[in-house]
Length: 362
Image (cartoon, rainbow, N blue to C red; front, side, top):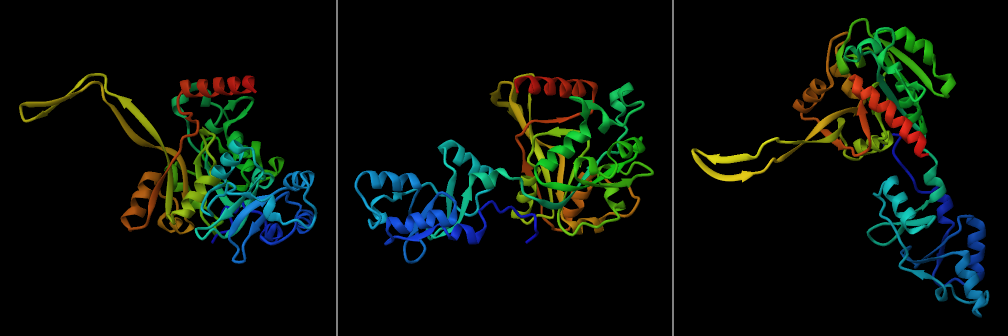
């Protein structure tokens, strides 16, 4: 399994120090708490199955009501604690812990055996992601008119910094540090601004398109071949999506290519008459049609690059189509986070307005 795979449980040797047999006494429980420093004791039976948990507060309350250090932990154990299965992701675990105001939660398998421990403090630390992130930043942005006459679209300012900088900083906050920027129109301005990425404590390489190669074609020019699945995003997409979760989703489903998609709803302006031949068989008043649209964010297996001929134009939907026709798995990641494709003047105005409102609300 690749090095980026999410592992939000505490180091295995550390969490095992929290395990205590059901026939232990309070003195042993105190020693267990001190040695693990994880503020929880997990009580298990002889087969490692969960019986309950206890904290230093549980021990104090037990002593206050007359128990002594030789008393059994069975008298103060918190039975039926909240637990999670191994397959739960970081986001779901954090939501459960936040809702219940707890800082530790055991990971239990189908046989009720304890196989890990989630800690709130560990979940707060972004994972280091060794995976590459490619950002397509070569577009002309002609629909934005004079805004891009002397500035490449990804360098247009939103909230005092370029859109591309927002994308890099967001990805960095999730543990990504290796970037490749694909440039074409006014690409030298992007390179002058970002350089090798040292200012942001990341590493940046460049793909320089001599001609526009589409939303996927530039990948065929990559000099450094990724050794594991990699992310691709358009340089004009502003979103709160968790890039790491898209990557984990891709790995979990063992796909060759994953596309982030958004739900788009469109309401018919008229009442619809349903017919069979000349007979009316029903009516639907201004129905709403729902579809998935491409969000411009992808995860690709490194082997996919072998499909791209160097210097040939290719758009991402065509690449996905070719992968699917070879009976390799292509999947959709349904996203619900705020998302904006800055392609037209109203989109740029909205991005700037949203940033101001977000800053004021903070």
